[in-house]
Length: 231
Ligand code: ADE
Image (cartoon, rainbow, N blue to C red; front, side, top):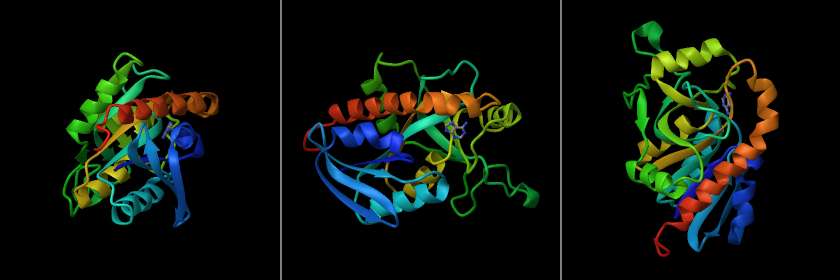
């Protein structure tokens, strides 16, 4: 079964509308919708914004619902040059840009215990996402930088480019990646750009987020449609 996580209602609405045979359950305040998408078994959750909400949701999907893989969908801020509103970013890896123990000698983003900066997405999921998207949207593959921060400052965006070569920024992907890595569950993310994570982001985000979220949801549905029916 595929687990699909979006942070906000707007990010899961189109997927929920396409879901059939749905059963709802709320755990830790998070709504989980179990059912089928294009006849493939799926569970969808609206985790809420930020890393802790995303981590709690991911662990519940794994421990309670027994998902085989997790896809994160939603909007993102553009970080790499040349990425624009409505472009799609598929994650090949994630970094938690707000993890910082550099004062005691670690590189920025280094997560002790798992001892890494980057959490690699599952290459099979990334490949299937790319195939599903095809030429439906302009799509790049790259690093998603996650933090408990809505980035709206070009100095911060520049730092995410310099330090981590990030393509886009969000507030959940790195936490989902971290939990999935601990549990050995394959994961991936597809994000659609709503803003450029600079001083214009505060104005652009409310205008473009709903359309970007729907574009991204359509990509998740295309992904589900190409999975084997009994997979
Ligand atoms: N999601 C969409 N835009 C974002 C931004 N600018 N910063 C963090 N997460 C986002």
